[in-house]
Image 1 (cartoon, rainbow, N blue to C red):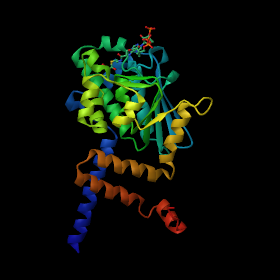
Image 2 (image 1 turned 90 degrees about the vertical axis):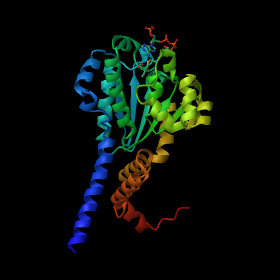
Image 3 (image 1 turned 60 degrees about the vertical axis):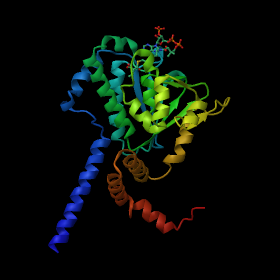
Image 4 (image 1 turned 180 degrees about the vertical axis):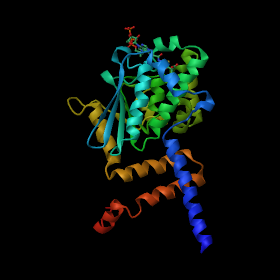
Length: 306
Ligand SMILES: CC[C@H](C(=O)O)C(=O)SCCNC(=O)CCNC(=O)[C@H](O)C(C)(C)COP(=O)(O)OP(=O)(O)OC[C@H]1O[C@@H](n2cnc3c(N)ncnc32)[C@H](O)[C@@H]1OP(=O)(O)O
């Protein structure tokens, strides 16, 4: 008897440890002081480069819209917008009713990466790497949100803007839009985590071509290589691209919040963890929905899946 109590306690503590690991991971924290990363220090430095904003609008439907808003600079990220971004991601981490997220740019263009004026001012390696760690942390937390996320690409997504598209679960491209990893032309490689995520989305060979060739990805090529999930045609006078994106996303966010969160968590585990840990995490997440209200309601309704 004592043995099985101990075993149950051990099991509970190890699964809590696993859930804790995924929770900690899902809260981001890619870097800490051991990597020479001081959030407050780089935050202060970035704030010295003002301009534009990152705006968040949450709808009762459980879908939020994050707008990269610096149209005078083709929605380039100023330093203060990088700080804004992390604050909006933190708000979304705490949005208990959230199910979906659309990331898009103002004035029908997505984002042209870092503000080159800010880049020139922090072009020393130390500051560059601190900005890189700050944005990698923000975008990793964005991707790990328990929401199903979509990058709505209109106009151009260049450099860091292309990297931002890879920090969403899906990418919808409007006709005429372009995703381009221009880093090579700048003597750079992605620094916001875009290379690591791109390899996981399209595979290493296609990633090598997109980065090595700084290729312009139009919607057709995007669909062909798996970087884009849908092309949104500009229907004259019909729904705007944002409304089309919300309609597209709502197919996957219908249902109770805990179930949508659980769906994202088990996919996150499958995407990021070694198989055994992913299976254990799946079991833990399954345990949160098995016998929960949505499950009991479905059982009571004897619904048929025609
Ligand atoms: C890890 C990420 C990486 C890094 O941080 O190192 C980067 O993201 S580096 C930045 C990569 N992005 C670019 O190099 C894009 C530069 N911009 C362009 O190629 C063009 O502006 C383009 C193609 C986006 C639009 O061209 P178009 O002719 O249609 O418009 P303009 O060029 O006249 O642009 C209008 C206005 O916006 C300013 N602008 C555009 N992009 C940026 C930017 N990234 N940083 C700062 N400002 C930007 C441009 O200067 C114009 O302003 P104006 O005052 O009229 O000169």
